Image (cartoon, rainbow, N blue to C red; front, side, top):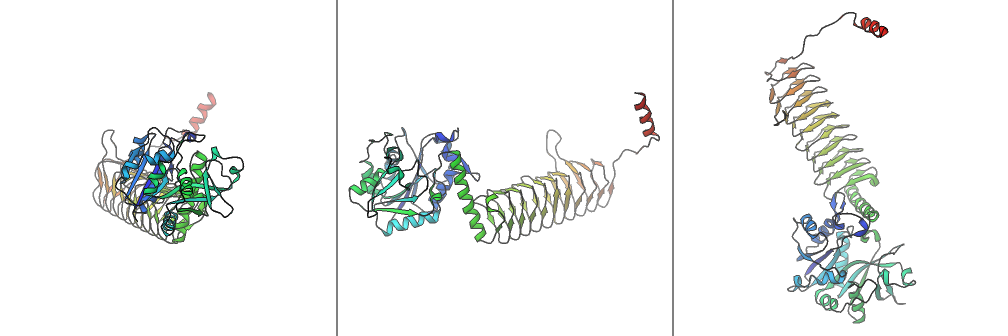
Amino acid sequence: MSLAVIILAAGKGVRMNSELPKVLHPILKKPMLRYVLDAARDMEPERIVLVLGHDSELVKEAVSDCPVDTVIQEPQLGTGHAVLCCEDAFRDFSGDILILSGDVPATGVSTLGEFMDSHVKNSADVSFISTLVEDPSGYGRVLRNAEGEVLRIVEDKDATADEKKEKEINAGIYCVNSSFLWESLDGLDTENNQGEYYLPGIVNLCVSRKRGLQAFALSNPKEVSGVNSREQLGEAEKTIRLAINRRHMENGVTIVDPETAYISDSVSIGKDTTVYPNTYIYGETRIGENCRVGPSVYVEDSQIGDNVEIRFSSYLTECEVEDGVVMGPFCHLRPEARIKSGAKIGNFVEIKKSNIGVGSKVPHLSYVGDADIGAGVNIGAGTITCNYDGVNKHRTVVEDGAFIGSDTMLVAPIKVGKGATTAAGSTVTKDVSPGALAIERAGQKEITGWAERKRVKKGKS
């Protein structure tokens, strides 16, 4: 049977109290809509149609890299009307249509797969996901007869006091035979408290017309929780985050405290790596095996090799780190920092757009920007590559085996030759020959009796 997907993403999200469209609010630095869209794409449907409304151009831009069609719901007359807006996009389609909501981001691909398999196995015309919750407020209730058969779905605002006591809710995820979908949508009306075309009405029509109906009961309600407020956004983020962390732990990663590890679903981590508390790993980050990351470390869009240690309060973005590197605490690797095998980047060191060679050390209190540092180089404390002249950026080159003394200012463009040394406290403005010692210091003077003269002067005052 052919499969297509409709994702409803037209709502404004008034309760979010935000200028940003609700479906674009981020979870682990990714818009919640992308979680729904990614799950839909993993189902390998023939087509995906996204229903947009408020701030449609912003939403289109956020998914511009995805092969989806879009339709605009205007005016917005309810969820049933939103699906009906897609009818023209499915004129040539015959099969099952999976209907998802863009503000229900935590539903896993495995759950959707089981749902679809059950729909096909039971030859249902309409299937929907239901679940039991302690507080069903705001959700449509699933009403059943004494034999447990579904009678209808009633929306929260239309339910009686007794009906509101029901704990089984409609999760708003459907799979419908396409021919029955368009047939049933034509039968919806607006005779309800909101004056809208309710999509759950297709379930009620399925029952009244004695067509095949399936309620797919889901044991974990958190997986289908909708996001209508900032509080619910936080709850959805936690559900997704813990599921991601659980997957990494199953793959051999130690996460010391899953409650305080924030890892994007796009991150890859090798086995026997340990992630310590309060650590954030986002984007297209790849971390190798046997690494130690954290605590309180931030890594985004970076490539980390094996046996790497990233110590307390280090911050890495868009950088590459090879095997056996030790970093931190309190180091900052900015975009295009490339750290070769066995190097050490110490505390309060900042690296930007620079290559640090094999086994080289930048132990502490230094800034290296726009530089190429060779192998086996030692950069003394307080060293700065003065790469910016106020107009242009210039590169610094330090060749293999050089020793840069503490508090050296390397004024680019400049080259320090192989095995050369700079004396501590020097401002080096000219190239240094291989094996040479560069010294730039004012002559030291000594004024005797200085402390006594200061004391006498202070007493007179």
